Image (cartoon, rainbow, N blue to C red):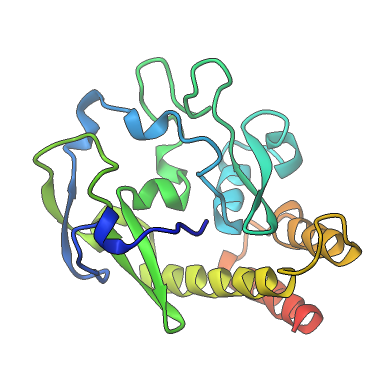
Amino acid sequence: MKRNVSLEEISDGKLYTRNDLVKAGCGDCQGCSACCRSMGASIILDPLDIHRLTQNLPATFDALLTTHLELNVVDGLILPNLKMDETTEACPFLNAEGRCTIHPFRPGICRLFPLGRYYENGSFRYFLQVHECKKENRSKVKVQKWIDTPNLKTYEQYITDWHYFLEHLETMLADAPAEDALAKNTNLYLLKAFYQKPYDPEQDFYPQFYARLEEAKKIFG
């Protein structure tokens, strides 16, 4: 999801890499769950997020769309996001004590918060969102430790490739009305190929993803 703001407005003005220290440590939140509430449709999920959810809950993507997820248009593309509770506006995976029930396999955006990603020159760096987390006096922590994702270098490359592939599709559909056949077929393909079609849990996710990405690039250029 693109944000039409400057880094000066929302960050400390610095860009970070996985090996840098950043003031994101919040002491295990200590009972705070503000970032898990009233997030609207902003917690957008990538294919690895869905793979983790479907394997660990377990449930199919289509089943989750009837309960915990929903589809929304994001910069011209239809993508899944966490569906906030209609009554409490809380994340559907937040329990009564305000704790995350899927913490070991939580989505990438949740792992990242309060960091964000700044994309440029075919890659990205991290930035600290200074107005988002309600906790004060946060401690310094290494970005890699904070994100808590195995094979982070591989994951970062995956996130980069996914981002720029979506950006390519967005550009391709920029002048196409939502009801246009090209837009419909592109979004249908995107959902089926990367989200609905299961990934083999016995195999590494990344090679499976890249095989699908290569097929998609043959179709969409």
